[in-house]
Image (spheres, one colour):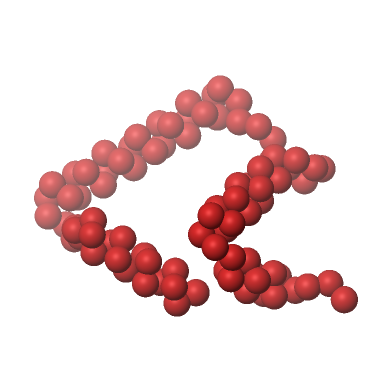
Length: 88
């Protein structure tokens, strides 16, 4: 019987960090292969995407400078990320 996605994910999370990183690279690369692969971005798509992200970045900077967003110390962010990763 084939593994369910949940079973595969559970087994993948039991791998070491290096093994999970290698698996993630393989899975991401697989998105560019096969009949259901996304069409590659054209130069126009790429330019438009860059413009959208540039606008988003400018908006985020403006909100930060106006004091509308909360900032966190990098050490706290990484500690929380590690805690969540260990929790699974």
